[in-house]
Image (cartoon, rainbow, N blue to C red; front, side, top):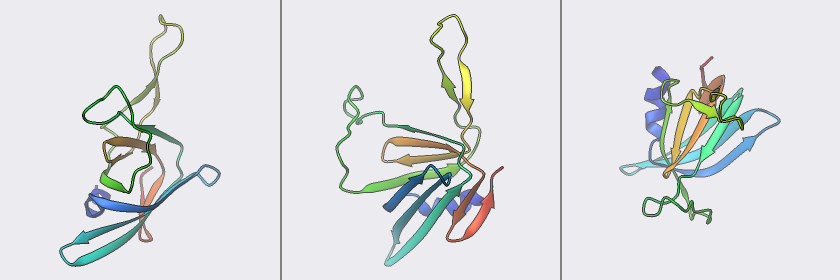
Length: 133
């Protein structure tokens, strides 16, 4: 997808602002990345959000305890559009009933070692929009 070439520019950038707006069905962030001596700023807007899932697996050293301490800053380690990487399932209370597929994300973000899985209709980088659905 052409969008992934554009999203590659955001890898290892610093998240300056992050907003999830449930009533507008959007997720937006402002990020900056230094390449050599040049600082590039990007505005990422994800619209038509129908589902998202955030997973904080814990530290690399102690996976039993997920840290909820405030970060000094946040790094957008990776972002990619691909609907073949993950599936999110719901486990019913009745153990005899099979797991049900909840949603298939088409955007995957890694913020430090945490994952944000999103299903959305479009993604926009600095006002250039890419339709996903």
